Image 1 (cartoon, rainbow, N blue to C red):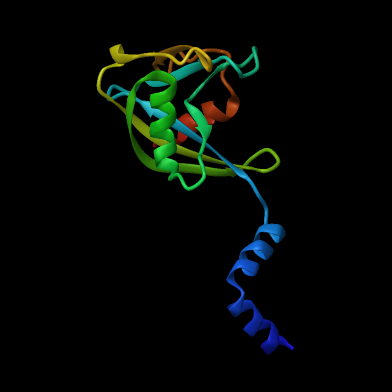
Image 2 (cartoon, rainbow, N blue to C red; image 1 turned 120 degrees about the vertical axis):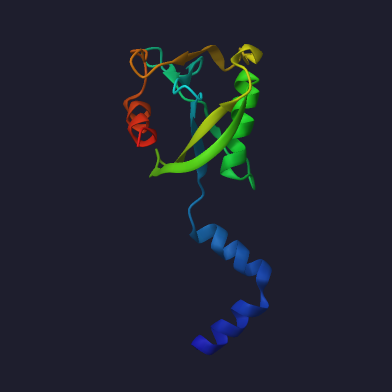
Length: 151
C-alpha cells in the first residue's frame, strides 16, 4: 500500500501541491526593521492605524508573496518615509497573532533624514530618537528589540 501511495504521490505534482496547501497553515509574514543611524539614534514612526495609546514603533509591514524579507523592510521604509535603508542581521522570529509570523531585522539609515516624505495614509510622524528619549506610546515588544541591537 505504501509503495502505491508513493508512486501516485510522485506522479501527481499538481495534486501534491493542492494536498499540501490544504493540510498546511496559511499565514502572513509581518516584517519589522529596527532602523538606526550611524550615531545610534533609532527611526520611529507614529503610525496612523495603530492603537492611540501606543502609536510609536519601528517601520513594519507585510511581506508580499515571494518577496524576500530583507526586501520587505527596504520597500516598507521607502513607501512610508521615502528613506533608504540597508538591511542588516536577523534579530528575532516570533510566532505572531493567529496566522502570522513576525520577523525582525536590524537596518541602517542610508543617506539624509532630510529626504523624509511621509505616506500620510499610514504614518503621522517620523522622528529619530536617542535611546534615552524614546516616546511613551511604544509597544513593549519594540522596546525589547533595542536590547538585541545594543549587543
